[in-house]
Amino acid sequence: MKVSKFGGSSLANAQQFNKVKNIVLSDPSRQVIVVSALGKENNQDHKITDLLYLTHAHLTYGVSVDEIFEEIRQKHLGVHHELGLSFDLEGELTKIRSSLRKNMDIDELVSRGEYLSACLMASFLGFDFIDAKDVICIDYNGQVDLEKTYLKIREVFSQHPKIVIPGFYGVLPNGKIKVMSRGGSDITGSLVAAALDAEVYENWTDVSGILMADPRIVPSAKSIHKLTFAELREMAFMGASVLHEESIQPVKEKNIPLNIRNTNEPDHPGTMILSQIDEASNKAHFITGVTGRQDFTVLSVYKEHIAKAPSMIRDVLEILERFECPLEHLTMGIDSFTIVCATSNIKERLYDIISDIKKQCLPDKVIVEEDLALIAVVGRQMKETPGVSGRLFSAMGQHSINIRMIAQGTDEISIIVGISNQDFNKTIQVLYEKFIGQ
Ligand code: ASP
Image (cartoon, rainbow, N blue to C red; front, side):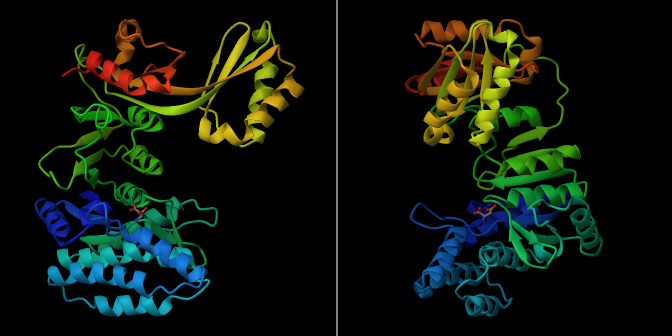
């Protein structure tokens, strides 16, 4: 049995609904479908979820919601009409319209996007509609109660073998609806797949899997056929974003493969993400991808024989914690250590942080550098392959790219280099060419 989640772009209009139907019905094991709210048809269009958040803002500020609700209404009615569906969508829309009021619960309102798209999809496929508020249980601290949720999903599935569930929301212990963070339908899909021990969790979107590099920088970037969850984390942390981060854990724990597929190119196998990949090492293509992020700030703290005063590192980390500034990297030398933070996180508090470091740690000096970019070369097979960093550094040297920082984790699945923001695109292109090629 497969769990298949379809994102908003796969549900942007009746034509997309038809593509989804073909995909679902072409494989009888696609029994459990999770959907996002209707997405954008084009760049001028709006996501239903965005319109619902906007509706809430209108209500809060006492602005009329007539126009915006009409847009939401027409979009759903259009799909309903074009697909020739007979369920009472007007009735559902009227219920939502009449519930709109000042101070209404924002979660309840924005969850209606997924609710309506799941109603449409269930009716179109002839599957049973199961409301997420009856199966996805969320605690007051925002965490999903896995035990309860899994139990409820299993119970439902034992009575309804073909179902459609709205993504993105669940229910609090007091019966109120609670939405997840944006993109949360990915999490719902993963929870359902884990609860039912699915053979695979398919995540259908509008790209044919994860690409080996950002296509805006490397237009010919190929898609990754297979990668491990650990590699995905490295790729995602360093900028490649396809899935909601929190959607990985439930399926990973159950060893369920996660397959990213393209609704607009259903014959493409997409990217398969697995806990472990048994393979003969491939010396020619051992790099999974090249990714990166720009705009980091580097703080270098100097103190003679710093290695003999480890408490100083602890103190600096404590200062960062106090200012709620997440740390991205830490490297150490004999007389200094360097911390790297996203500029957007440290910018506002930089001078306070430096002042506290000076007061509390009495360093010899503190140096700040900005405009650092980090590039990660990711690949599970690097572990068995000597000379990768040598090739990486020589390729960068040949193209006159100055390396400002180097880091490699002990698991050896990625090498991270720090360079200037201005060399970002060039470095990704050079490394892609060097390790992955035409
Ligand atoms: N519709 C929600 C959003 O736009 C959730 C989702 O699509 O996964 O974030």
